[in-house]
Figure 1 (cartoon, rainbow, N blue to C red):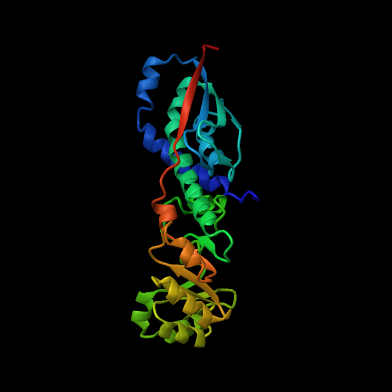
Figure 2: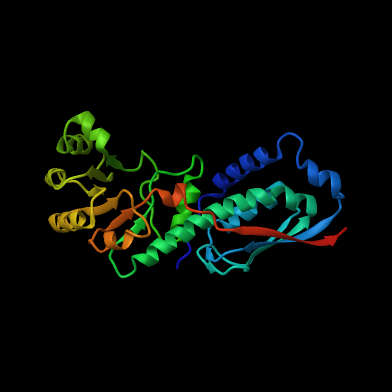
Length: 288
């Protein structure tokens, strides 16, 4: 697969600075600083303890060089690669105190993002041969959205909107506030520019007909069964993008994809995907 474009380094560095500051507090690593001599050096290996899809390796490893510019990093795999348990992902060389100070920040980020990529890749495999694509949502952890959405791309999925400002998505509460699906779509069309897409959530075929008549660009088919989704896709007949959402699991995703929808969105990919087990193994080289 083509390696996705990662978030800008400025955004990543700001996140890593906050994470390192959170971990090191006011006094730094009192354990390592009290028992390891200042001149001591080591080599650390970032190792996958389980098979999976990698995401965020360069960003995670950046924690070491951001904390201490003397640290040297050699990446052994790339984001988007499938790895096996026991495979080395990176080699980190430098002062032992520095390696241990930044270790947890690296592993927390790398394990989380690789877990998202691994879960996304699994969902993509489960729908192989269908027209559907797996997409994420805005259900991301605060401050991590750009990186979590990058991890979805590393897993072979695609991104939904990044925020409230880049597309119109009319949800059930919007419809309740306005009074009708058609009224909400028409109001959105009148307010936004011609480059802004308008999507509307519908939970019935009657609402779908209303959205189609109003000229919607995409419909979010909320919590529909595979049979209901199939009927909705037939009714749309290519006039707009169809997105299935709500309660999608590994067990149900294939049947949902076979209904003919274009997109399947799931929030748990970013907020609840299990971490990929990744460790940091230290090899002591001694004093300089």
